[in-house]
Image (cartoon, rainbow, N blue to C red; front, side, top):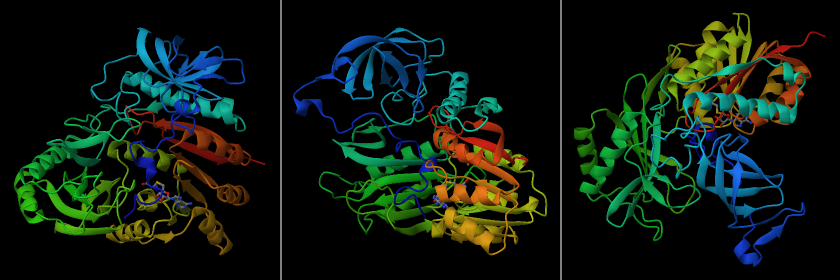
Length: 496
Ligand code: SAH
């Protein structure tokens, strides 16, 4: 299953696919002119240093300051800090810079537990204390609403972000590339904006179980001299190691993504893993040949053990094959689903639509409370899993179909299956215009929007607020130490 082209499950990855402000087409070295008067009378050149006061954080967690009224983006700094920065990029609309020195530190600054946090992607906020991170996540939402100004926005009930008791050790899946650098095996993440792999013995945002498996497997691969992928030569076997742990059972599912069809040495490797890591209950090979930015290939083969790991969510069991999608933070996922449940306030007469359903986790965990559930999702394997999981839990009032929300939602209505309740959980791009139009036309009584992008949420609310009132927006911190935002919106039909 999935995480394939266009990474449809982007939503829950580590944010490495996020938009950055750097590295656009302009290359000052080629232009020969590093000094740019950018049309606003501001003369700046690449390499120039200046002190900068940080006013706030932008939506990607980067610091924002102003140089002669021009906006400057600097990663790794906090509001109210004064830093000496060096310009790395000059664009008509902004300047990008990096920190040389922090002259005045914020009281919110802490030393990141992960030493590499400033170097690799996905740890944008680890230098900020946790309560400030939670405030930031509320602020991201406010910034987005201010920008798009949906109807009534200034009166919205914006609730304090629900954080984690322990904002570490939450990621239930590690998906790390492996390369041989000199004589050493590196298993970890790429340096920010580069292709240099950093070996990471400890990653505090990961569950200890996934890291234990990752490090032990690295040792075994080394000891057994298993062939490792070499990107330059495009040769060798093991490219990426994926370890996923079930929060419920502690079982770990292990997948080797390989460049080659065959897997020389796999028998000895499996034997060694069985001995060293009894928690690994299934071992798989995913074949993904050649140089590609996609992590997963199309073919997955079971090498040993169980086909699935099982996870329980709000009392329902979900069987997960290696590619089946599951939110990365089990604890906060339950918080999100419970928020959705209480916001929807379902009755047994309600027809509920679970739009952007994945493997049906939301709809199936709410099916007891509704009359009927229908869901849609564009990935056929996910839809198969959703229907399979419905049967597994003896849920017979839920049905999942392959297709886009914007096509199937109107189709069902036209066929006379009219939704009383709707929950949408779109990817970062938000809702399709056609779906928004259809929601405005049919106006289901109960409506909850689960969003992972405050900006597209605010944009969508501009339309939706024509027919719906926003009762509240609850931010939930699904990804502590990162800038990623998640929230649940309760909408109620406006009285005419
Ligand atoms: N609700 C699920 C998954 C949310 S991720 C959960 O909580 O786990 C968003 C999902 O929307 C992905 O599975 C993606 O494949 C799917 N998707 C993307 N565009 C879609 C569209 N236009 N219509 C329906 N589903 C879509």
